[in-house]
Length: 421
Image (cartoon, rainbow, N blue to C red; front, side, top):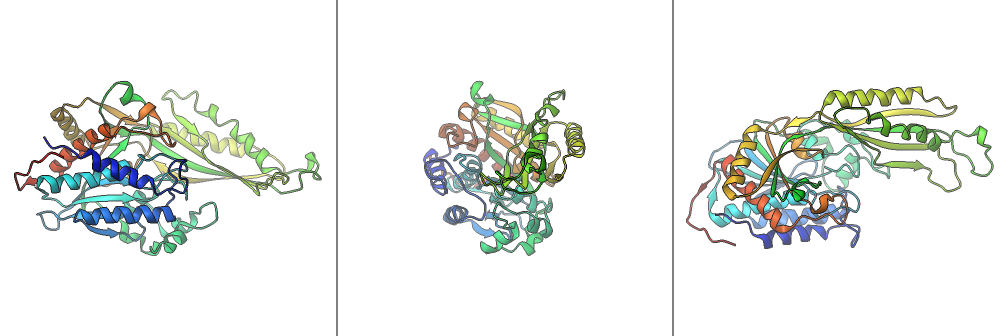
């Protein structure tokens, strides 16, 4: 039986957790930041240590490649993202990258040679914490983002994604070279923490994702006029925040009468000029909508558009912008079958699941066979410093991933080295 090395896994997770701008208060690692650069150096170093051929694409996604026996064959890719939400946890994203590193280490330990090339990937900006929208690294790989988009995406300081890339030594103008297709990618596999309570509550080891829900993220901008808080009469104000509240208070009720139980979240709100004694002249906020049915998402979007159109306040204007739209996505049935067979082979308890969170896997599924593995999250908590997955549970998920990657790459064992680590 091939066993993953729990010590290696733990060391990688804890090493990556050090690269944070909020030590002692969780992982804060925004794309193209100095923390990104430090994590990037570590990941590339570990890929080099494994003998992989390391490269970064034009926009900053990192690849480590093990060549296969078949020449010019499409690659099997395994990995996830290494950015974080503000004050997030150590496992969301890095667990998938560590899975890729450990799978390659097991190939080396046990003398497996892939027929198809094997690539480990570490992607940027999955969370969307800096530029909004999310899954940006994988969307660029899928060819869904243009240079115009990168120039329009801006962080809270007004710096565009294209400018941030340039500061890190990447070239947004060459975004086309980052694209991958089904011609050069045979399959993609991602391992992720569940970020929910189901696996732990049922004492199950692995979740095999059948489908990722559809989602959209829009940004609503409300513009008014600044004025002095003490000298501007109430009846003469064009308070952008008051205008925003007229919309915000109505949003939760828009999903309550939908039969498939969609969810809606206002997750980011910016008030300008953000002075205690200044009337706000602009408010922007994001609205995240998720459902297993695309028609439900469209219906809720229409309700929001109508609400925005119906609000009439003198001196106040409203506009909406789509940051992300993703249809519900089914994972590969063939890869699900392999995952089930390997869970049973390893004696692991598993369940099929629907993911309510978005992942890079949903973007890869647009052009290649894709699988997504979940491992349990302690108390179902994620996106906080308390996020935790037991290393023994992560080890089990990685062993399932290893067995599956061996099959997807049609790897063969070249030696009798079966030492257990």
